[in-house]
Amino acid sequence: MPHPDTWLKPLPQGLYCEPGGFFIDPSRVVERAVITHAHSDHARPGHKAVLATAETLALMRARMGPKRAGHAQQALAYGETITINDVRVWLQPAGHVLGSAQVAMEYRGSRVVVSGDYKRTPDPTCTPFEPVACDVFVTEATFGLPVFLHPPPETEIARLLDSVTLFPNRTHLVGCYSLGKCQRLIALLRRAGYDAPIFVHPALAAMCAVYEAGGIKLGDLRAVANAHHLAGAIVLAPPGSAVPAAIKPVIVAASGWMRIRQRAKSSGAELPLIISDHADWNELNRTIDDTGAPEVWVTHGWEAPLIHAAAQRGIRGRALRLVGYGDEDAPDQEAAS
Image (cartoon, rainbow, N blue to C red):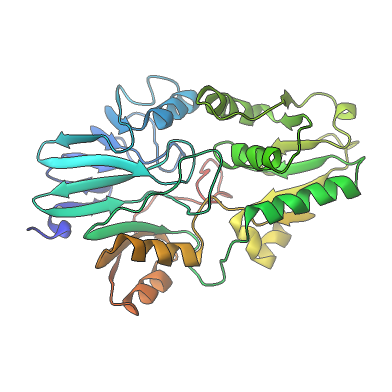
């Protein structure tokens, strides 16, 4: 049985499955790509052939246009198996955003699972993460430090609604990226009983439409219009969006990075909410254990602490140091939260 490092290799373009002839989330244009999810640091335009879930392909088309999302697009349902050359491939839910998937591969008796970005906290807008037993688990480490322990999102949403009650005449301007975080915040607000109209910046509207088309009901959403309609409303917009001076909003930021006081202060948020679409420290370690993998490869984030923690449990670790993956506060990345 060949060791996975003989057939799955980090190259400048990204992680390459040599016997299958495809890359996973390549950072450069390639002939064949398997895409874990539609965030722009994982799903790049221009690949010749793209394999992903139907939801990811729909989101890519909405973001990039049909042709730039891949000249040949193949949708694969969760759990559906195909063989690419000599490699058996299937997708498992990652729980990150709509359509997000782990890529599971088997080649000559060895199995590798590339998780993409993921979280373990339940999310009403996407299918929950499902651990897959494997020989090597490839994980992110965006929040791979013990300080990152995310509270239940419901408690953070309650803080937002408490503020809306406390300041009924002020607009609450919530900075969030367009794919995943926006729709999750809306769904969490609806679950908390908030049924008033939610105003959405035009930059976020297209992704909301794809979610709605995919069966994720978001309730009464309205375009941001003139200022006097927004008093007492919740408005979702990209971080740093300009608003009319007359609004004088409560600035809200929703991110896992709000755990760090200095990061919260530099965001300018009056109300920082710790709501993340990535696994926290405990979830990263639990997930590694759940896979039963004797070896873990870390693609990006805080690699060394996670590898050290895994080694304490007898799990071998390796930092892949793949380039091209960003965080949610980096322009046009829309990756971490």
